[in-house]
Image (cartoon, rainbow, N blue to C red):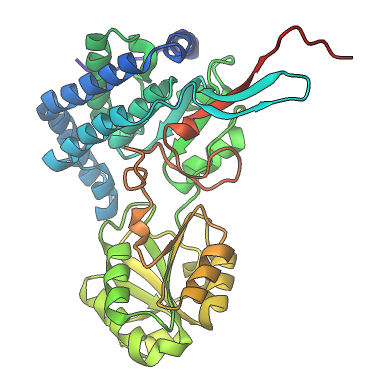
Length: 430
């Protein structure tokens, strides 16, 4: 049964509800931090089973969300991010089950050394505590965040967006049934049962010290608000202005396959390519073929003068196109002067998310991988591999583009911090 929708009559009622959620999460986090691997893994397996068992309920809730989004005029890309089907629901269950197979990060000794005075110092992984996840249109975040937080010994408070509210509640209900079946505190994974926007502000304040870190998953405006207002640490996830650079040494057929997949496999994901950069050295052989392929696949191309010269269907690109995250079947394209020109463009316009080079020249590839300052850089592979599942993490809470604590896909290890454990034999400091 889904968490009942709460009707909040006063600000005081909302504050009391959110305070209780924070207190309950903190208590659950203390229990989870000490839970053995077997208990957490059993809970994850039960959660996966209940997602499968509740698939028809989840699908019905999602159908309502999708219908409401269409009625509100949502774009096809937005609908794609929101919509579930049997395959995607099964994929959620598979991801939760895979998280259960991962090694337990809690208690792992990261480093161990002996000091000259005989003391033994160990650095060990421990849970972060309570994680607040604020997300918009992706219902699968409910399952991914719940599973990863639990595996890492954390409690989580989930606040879904209005467009995916019914879907997220239905998925959360399945997770809670799994927790119940495994004898794990049901407050380990909580879902904010109201659409009241003020609840977001309360989470950003930390709920009186209950929340240890905030993870935003959504558009630029959401992330900007979280970064501006949060009073607790944030795992920053900026927009995915992802590039594919096709070097003069690139095999054309490989380049075509990678570019088409990077842009068109799913246009609404943060790892979708938004800009195509082509080496001036291969303009005669590669540029026209790549542009025509994209246009014929239904992708709008906005290009510089050289790109427009290859096909009359190419629209002019303005300065606003180079830093744009379209999340749609649109791509900006321009010619650059080799790998140096590509690196310069990415440094100026990119978002430090995911960028790829297609090249046979190993020296060019090595320079690109070394100098492009993004969370994920790839050689001869699609940017759509920017995904925790593809990295072997089982799932992800998000892709962190900042430089503190976590960067790239956030999996179970990134949801831990560490402490030092010191073993002595009566040593005192002189």
